[in-house]
Image 1 (cartoon, helix red, strand yellow):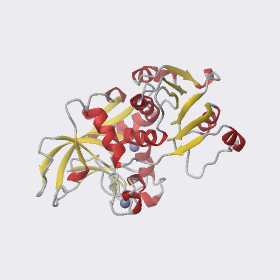
Image 2 (cartoon, protein in one colour):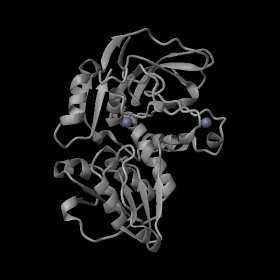
Image 3 (cartoon, helix red, strand yellow):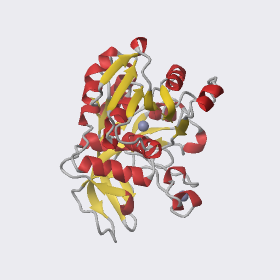
Image 4 (cartoon, helix red, strand yellow):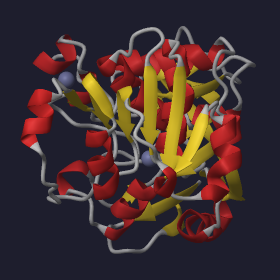
Length: 333
Ligand SMILES: [Zn+2]
Ligand SMILES: [Zn+2]
């Protein structure tokens, strides 16, 4: 089978390797749609914290596929099922897992990081990590479950009340997913601030009420601000956009060991609550799949570029250079 691999030396290579052998209770899945993101490039260039990767590795942590073989003891999954697989594999024994914080499992293990990912012809997975998609969930939406579950995990923490006014900072994939997913909490409005007017069509499809460019932001304040731009300027703006008693949810990473000055008195006097959120919990993964499978959520609109896996170089080029509107870039194995 084919697999898109890297050793962290800045190079990706599509290589031939043997199909994984199915163990007890495992299913073999043929990936159908595989998203690529900036993290895949960090893995490729070896700039990610080495504690999180086992090289050489097949990339691909945002994906959906179809079951082609069921191992012994598999009960719930059938050949032909369209599925997604929870990427962070919780040990289910440690203190964090027992408390439901599977995103912080003490034994870190994740597809596309510590074990081979889905930019390949086949992946094998333990049955309990596999979620079946209904006809209401497209393959494209399935490939977006992973980044969407990151947003769901943050929203479950921030837990905005009914009729909350929400501002999303950032017009990239995580910003657009934040705006779209926030609707499940029944806010009175969701505004988004970004840098690229060309993202307008995607922002509109994410059900955003008002799309501001950074240069046109007014002095309106919000109950919940979601920082999804991963920039210093985005974080600085977020501190000025909360009402007193407001909440800040930080999803964007600004760079390893980068720091930002914080007006501590504003934090205290504003009575603010701040959340950081890492990865996704099993609960958030299940909730995201549920929203898609019920038809309440459809993320297909976010996919703007698709390439066959054999043309992965075009995919990487689109991820870096394609003009906006740019959403998710998919590779199709
Ligand atoms: Zn990603
Ligand atoms: Zn654990």
